Amino acid sequence: MEKPKFNIAVTGLNNTDNPGPGIPVIRGLKESKDFDVRIIGLAYENLEPGIYMRDLVDKTYQIPYPSSGKEAVLERIEYINSKENLDFIIPNLDAELYTFIQSKEKLEKMDIRTFLPTMQQFEERHKANLNEYGEKYGIKVPLSKSITSRRDIDELKEDFEYPLLVKGKFYDAYLAYTPEQVNTHFNKISAKWGLPVIIQEFIRGTEVNVIALGDGHGNTVCAVPMRKQYITDKGKAWGGITIKDEKMLELTRNLIRQTKWRGGMELELIKTNQNEYFLIEINPRIPAWVYLAVAAGQNLPEALIKLAFGMDVPNYSEYEVGKMFIRYSFDLIGDIAQFGSLSVTGEM
View 1 (spheres, rainbow, N blue to C red):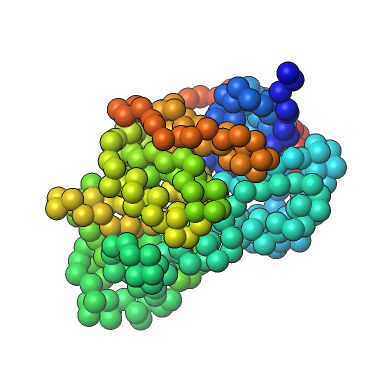
View 2 (cartoon, rainbow, N blue to C red):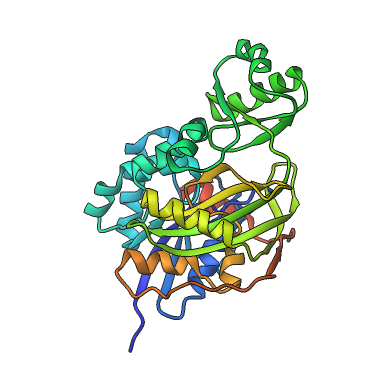
């Protein structure tokens, strides 16, 4: 029986020291034994490494940043669809999700599917709403507060002890030991990601993460916990290992059951020395370490596509404990003609 073939567009090709999830997502899709894929890369910059990985990305198009507006993005997608007959789009960056979630109906009119959280699910788990989120769903969270001005920094001593974390609304997190350091990080983050900037209580313990996939009806399709073994100065896992932790898995299943989460997600947790778990962040999409879950036996990108197209999805109840990943740097060789083609025509 001939396998179905899907034309799948994927963003997040920036596989650098702050890697996007695009390339590991593609690797998972390419390894599916139940369908074949043609991968269309959607890039924001013409030096995103994934563009030049010809064994993984079949064709690349440049798209406008979400800040250009929803209509500009949809116009470009419509053009790409006219050339590639897209079946599915997997957006992999937090900053673009708002646009794609809002555009669900317009994309469906182009016969393009997505499998993303609802706008309510997306909005309520924002870092700025973490206190209310924890209270609503019965999860321990660090004290968090949004600030919009440098004048707010002096008032932090009323609620927080140093050190504390200074976070952007989409990305970046810095540890600050003094108000002066908070001020420096505030300026840097607000210039890059805008306001508000989030101040969060620093919880001492071990950083652990769970990657998961919800079917939109309260069921957990995939879930794999991981402990970070090496963390970069940007707070990104550069090495990690799958662990056996039923408490983390139960926390994840309970959250997906209550929220009826739809799509991929990552829970970032701190496990204290007292074996308490604090939820510090929810990333509402597939994380960059997804290929570790694939290698451990749960192919989340494949399951995502199967859910969207009504195909049978395996019962991913098991995974291999002790599976490890280590990122590395690699010199990818291209040609100036490739760079020129993308710069001039917006496609390659």
